[in-house]
Image (cartoon, rainbow, N blue to C red; front, side, top):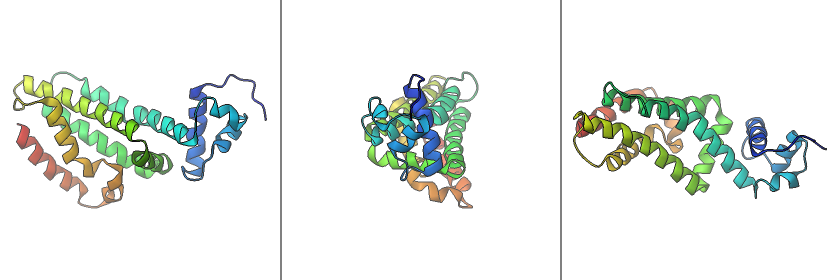
Length: 195
């Protein structure tokens, strides 16, 4: 079992993601990832201290790729209605998480599990999302579309108020027939509160 290619963290994360998709987060071991890379599991421990740290790194990268980066492109847009962009941002977050819960269930399960254990990673992730929302809200305040307030406080309140529609703990509720209408009702109340 030998691979002469230099082993990078990215290569390990790529392999770990593939193995996690194949076996699921509960059944995947560091040995499985090492086997996929044709290296010893000790080699992986030089890059990641534990199975938990490897899972956290895979999750963190996955969150950036599928959530943070696409939402950032909405947050940095300029012009147009801040209210429309804010709703687009939240709808994108909600639809992305719902799609991954259905179509990439192994990675979504790992993400859901990490939310329970890796508090620091998840807090950083949530704070990045709230920062994006705050920037949209701040633009809406500057254009007088939204009431003057503290953007980060308002962003955190809206993020918390909509958590049923995007927090992985509620994933089983996302396929109900009424979920879209329920979000629309919550959104109308929130928007009227800041407009």
